Image 1 (cartoon, rainbow, N blue to C red):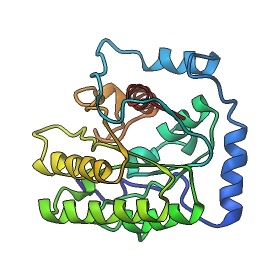
Image 2 (cartoon, rainbow, N blue to C red):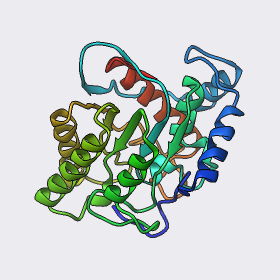
Image 3 (cartoon, one colour):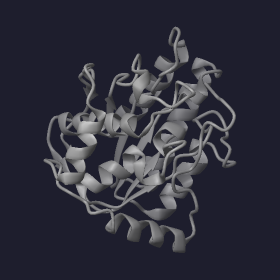
Amino acid sequence: MPVPARRIIAAAAMCGAVIAAMTLALAGCAPSPLAGGQNRAAEDAAASTPNATPDPVVHAQADTVAVSGLVVTIGDSIMAGLGLEPDEAWPRLVARDAATDVVNLSCSGAGFTIVGDCGDDYAALIKQAIAMNPDVVVVQSSDNDVDSTHDDIDRATRDAIDELHAALPSARLIGIGTLWQLDGDEPEAIGWSSDALQNAMDADGGVFVSIGQPLRGRPELLQWDGEHPNAEGQIVLRDAVEAAFADAGVVL
């Protein structure tokens, strides 16, 4: 649910110089193969807990598809890594493992139906992504849409993904379901937002994956607010996303 100051941009400036700087930063992150590496082993050890991450639910094409080139990610403050260094957010961790370039457009407070602290909603972020002509666009639905109606969420999601597909017909589109870490019952809108994104991805030839709620009931993986992942929580999200991508046959 929207909370002031809960969303930040991990890599929001869209001028050419900033994009180039992010690419150089990724090149210096000492990427390692998915199978291991010293840094990966250290992270996995730090993130290990007695609780197992739920198996991801995958709605995807069966064939394995290898993609390459620029990857753009669009999400909220969880994807941005609120309260952490930009390199600690799971998109940058995935980029390092896959040795690929990622621009993270995640925006504090944004969703398909709501404008975030950056002054943009997802539709505006998608326009920024289109301008970069990426090979892959990853979009994660957000609990920031929790106060919107089912119809509004569905309409805004379909319109945004349709625009993305029309502008980038050759790009690989990947959707990820909404996360919810807070205590208490999960609002209906969490399911609505995930369903809307799945339907939009299915309609436009994309892939949708649900990683479940791997941080729910695991306060040791969350920051003081009980919602945003700490560094270890971001590692758990990285592992869940990579597993879901592998099961969906997507290789970055």
